[in-house]
Image (cartoon, rainbow over all chains, first blue to last red):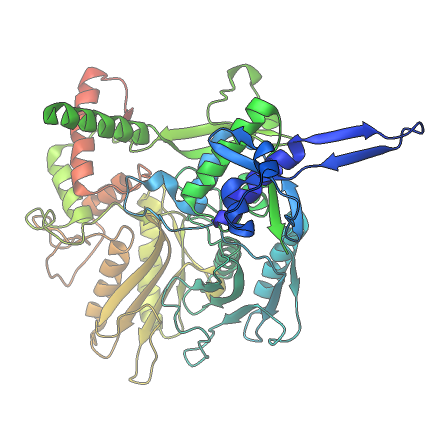
Length: 304
Length: 286
């Protein structure tokens, strides 16, 4: 997480905390005076080291931070969303799916995992090699997710050029393997690309009916991998085998309510994106404390 | 001072390990509205959603196995361990330790056109025999590849192409795909140019197919005609021991990895619990 984000949180805490309403005339027209408090460190970065007497008169000491009134602070363009509160059991589960946090004592700890997501619309393109039934089922599944999950947008496009999500199938030994970095021999696999903002921008989903010749299984694995590619999720031991996200789901199953709930939360703007486990935990601690002590919600600014 | 610090560190680590081992895994979440007996609902590990609450219908503590081994003798257990984990002398040193693995569903075999009719004629009754004697694992033959989860094919000429997951060098070989420790797909390939006699072909197909039901190893000191005997015979057949091993293998469902070390602990603990509770056969063992 960038420092910028942290400052923004503090800023919004106080921005929403101090509102002065004055009665200006007999018609009771109300005018709101807003004062923007930002951390001193940030103020010095933006305005230089020198402070006036007026500046120091407006200091507020909050916890261990010194806050100062800033008249020229401009909020970056974006959308403000209040913190989405969830219970601790759900958060433990979510952290395991995204960061593999419960496996600390096992071999697979992922210290550097972050919350990765599709910010842009997913534009699906199915190569001609993909079987019609498989395409129909996968597309139906994808569009249903698009409907159910806010801020996750998926649609099919007609040309490969216009797409950012390419699905192809290796039906014969000589069929072209578009993504040669895919080495798995499980029959379905995906290769996903993301940028420094932890946003996905391209994905290749490979289906291999030569390996996975059972069509029902191929469809199931395609749906499962598509679902995983929406957040680069990990399997979890916490869930029973009838869940997509479960480590033991060797049998064909439907997307469970909890799978969908995790996806919805992943795409909720009531949490910060792109951050790692440490930052995620710190933010939740801060947001919950704030909510408990002041009944105020931490706001997240998602820049355009 | 150093001793105190070490003790503190050890106790901290111990607390963390204990906490982790108590983690409830394999949680089956159901909507609170669908639970029948509302008085017995536990809210431990419940998840609160906007319009619903999901409660845990069933879960197990991490590292704990629910086991029912029934009655067994130690000689049989030695054979079973050899079949699942390999030869007693080498299995503990083996770099790639074996784990208990099994099929998660019934097997639907597709016999490819490349499989000779005479072989098919022998194989189908063989599958039926296994299904008949097996308590849980059933095997059937299907007519479409896309409906199957197990493909058997032959390479009959040098131009025949192998499946992507098959090792080309072996005259007969199989490969299985698994999720966690459960198989969901298999391929068995016979090269009829290398294995050219019919008798050798059918014996090999039967042995390799049977081995693929649990990634079994061949074992010593059992009758030579047994499917799992590490002994050449021109008359391989399904013996009582084969059925016994297969049924014992599918009697329990292990959701996490069970190595030989873990399995020996389970057997020992199971024996102790059985003595304490002679009328009970199912126990939770960690």
